[in-house]
Amino acid sequence: MSIPTGAQGLPGLAYPEASLKRLSIELTEKYAGTFGAETVHRYVLESYTALLRTAKVRSHLLAQTTHFVNERLTAVAQAAGAAAHDLPEILYVCEQNAGRSQMAAAITTHLAAGRVHVRSAGSVPADRLHPAVVTVLAEVGIPLEDAYPKPLTDDVVQAADVVVTMGCGDACPLYPGKRYEDWSLADPSTLDLDGVRSVRDEIIGHVEGLLASLERRHSAV
Image 1 (tube, helix red, strand yellow):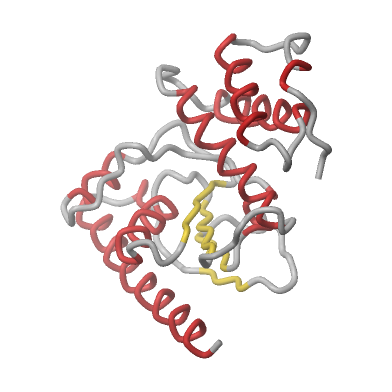
Image 2: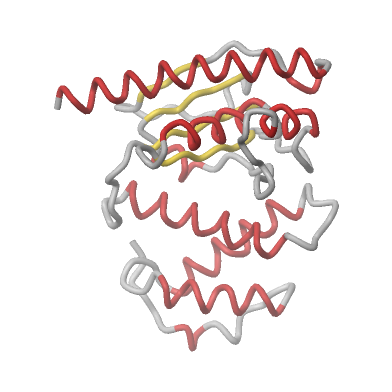
């Protein structure tokens, strides 16, 4: 871990937007004792740039960057043992993070009711969620209003206990001691609405099985 330095070191750094400078200062204070200002600055700019590549509408970009960089910094701290890792961490990865992995993450969060922590990412993230995915999850009472496609980063893989891939090829790095699963699911972008519903129902079955296995493992410990 970096040795924390004061937020006063940030004004000389170059930011594309003043809001990012403010975010770096806020996060430097939040993670004081775990990350230094330079580390936080780097993660803020990397996260912002990664999301900017696919953003067509920038009105939510700062909020998305704030969420994304917090998730990444928390993941790094967890992997290094500098932050609590009290819940099983599940990472869902597909190619665009616009359909399958987003559905799996939302369904898991809904069904687990706080028993696990969930992240999702894409090897080649899209600029928005597939509209049909939002529709079919709303049909079963699961909202996706705040979800957005995110790029796959090494830090979230390192923090995960279970990594579930869905058609992302070899993009996901392998680490010893982690549980990996690959779910063979059709890409919602190629399907009509009934086809996307079928994928949703398949994912529900997979998630129920995964949560049950995690419960059994926890009970056996």
